[in-house]
Length: 200
Ligand code: GRF
Image 1 (cartoon, protein in one colour):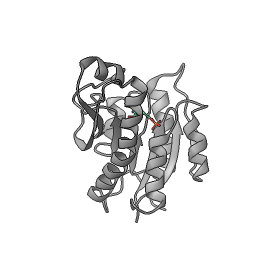
Image 2 (cartoon, helix red, strand yellow):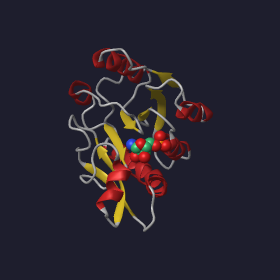
Image 3 (cartoon, rainbow, N blue to C red):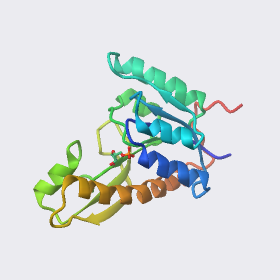
Image 4 (cartoon, rainbow, N blue to C red):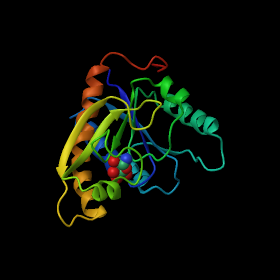
């Protein structure tokens, strides 16, 4: 039985698309269950619908984190999720939520972690004058950007780079690295569905 991967986004959804393509073309032996956004007009929702993937919006504004995460959890369970991929999802998940999915949540970050964890990554990378950057796919733990690393991919930082040229170069690397990392996790978790998954 193939595991089900659900993807959380907040925006453009290009990494979501890279993951969905890899599942669609059977490069990764997994199904995409649902794409959930906390932002109602995230462009990634239309991209997901274009793949025929169910979508859902769970707004975060004006609600407690507990209420937000309870809604997320209900939808993830409804779609029999085994693995969660955060793909440009701009909310920090609580330790309680992360613990429910221990070892089963991946995130992608546009730097070579542990360097440049957190936000404002491209500006800080350029300001530091480093010659190399890249992206990191890591397991999500309660502490932001610090779980164990599955895949890192390096790109050069070029003279004259702006935040947008650097971001674009890193993004191309992300679209390769994230499917690689998901394939690794899928093979690690083979035959181990999420304990709460209700198989019908
Ligand atoms: C990516 O750069 C990713 O590293 C960061 O947010 C961006 C999301 O881009 N976490 P997209 O929505 O996948 O196109």
